[in-house]
Amino acid sequence: MKKYKIEVTVFLCGALEMALELVAARVLSPYVGCSNLIWTTIIGVMLTSMSIGYWLGGKLADKDPSVNRLSNLILLGAIFTSFIPILETVLVKKFSEISQNLVLIAFITSGIIFGLPSFILATVSPYAVKLKDKNPEEIGKLSGKISSLSTIGSIVGTFISGFVLIPNLGVRTIILSITLILLILSILLFENKSKKYFLMIIILGISLIGINFLGKVIFDIKNRDIIEDVDSEYSRIWVKKIEGTNTSYKTLQVDTGLESYINQETGEMGSRYLYYYDLFDYFQKDAKNVLLIGGAAYTYPKYYLNKYEDKEIDVSEIDPKMTEIATRQFDLDINNPRLKIYHQDGRSFLNYTKNKYDCILIDAFKGLNAPFELTTYEAMKNAKNILKDNGIVITNIISSIEGDNSDFIKYEYNTYKAVFDDVKVYQVLPQIDSKVEQNLILVGIKGNSNINEVKYEEYKELLDMEITDFSSDKKIVTDNYAPIGN
Image 1 (cartoon, rainbow, N blue to C red):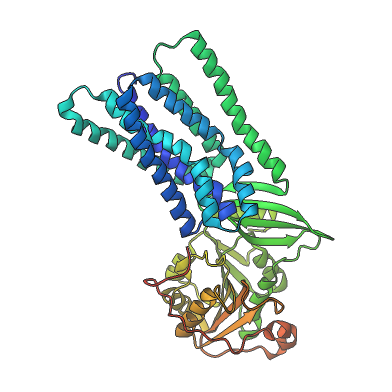
Image 2 (image 1 turned 180 degrees about the vertical axis):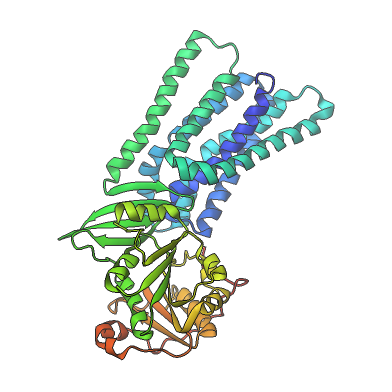
């Protein structure tokens, strides 16, 4: 270790840099989302911080290179990292409350919270080159070696953080681990340690751990409504308890999107748009089995199984932790024989399933932050292929009907018209202005409607919300051309 301590340091700092980048997205996602714009902002800020770190690291190394100075730089990185949990609450949360510009929030907060430790870690590579430079004639070879070690570390850090650490340890534990690893690296590098040095390190180590836990305390105080804060392979998930005027609701939030909520007094679904999925019972009177893409808290499957005792439902939910949370917090009975759960990406399920359905319900979109692969012509062709005769697709879309925010529904309307034999659009809440984003229900029908006339009065209130004059001049969305989604 002693012989290769510089190389090990370079490798680990490269790994920790990428771990911080992935953690940055998770820390910020509940406040600014995780769209392409947000990811682009975070990556751009981190790369900018790293480029400044490379430049300044080289200058510092030329001025006065020493292992102890490198040790102190890494120690500074540990200090900056330890403050991330506190800054999440006092900075990101505060910014999100005073500004609606999510990209600006992401730019400023990621630059302050993650840019500083990323900048410090980037100084390590050029500093290492200077410290290892014993033969000027081989400086190119040495630079290549150090760059390679840093890059390999980044690759390892990316895979381990994304596939193992985030879903199993959670963001806060990772931040504490990065802080402690940097602290240990700093200690190992420092030469000629004295008793005074060790005393300082002990005090500093206790302080860094204390700062990390203080962040958790501050978060809990400022977010008393959060019951669970869970990191999965795919998302950061919050379960909240929200007190209303006469009742309380339990909600499930993924990133910035409110995915599900139920009335804790009555157990009823809080989202009105979910009741529009019942229109399958009107348009396809012989329907016996339904596929839902996007389970979240499984509020609709629970309602469906209770209301339709002679029918079955399959759910394609990509995130197993979502199902665990639904079971633990929302009373989902995963052992119900009429419920089948597939932990699989929705598009992949449409592509490869051999099952046939009377109806497909799509509830996987969060405004324009939609998985684009479920919005395309090809996706809907696959959906139509697994529908039985006279089957239907019912999709919840958040969009305005007119104006600047109407692109989503207009793109999807024309895409559905290119696939299905009949297409209908419903407005969930009539009192909302047509230029305001809202829940819209898009229905695509294969063949002819097999209408259940007996059910008309039951669903009349929903059917009366059809927008009969809806039109669109947008292009068809394809796998090659998808201007919506994340």
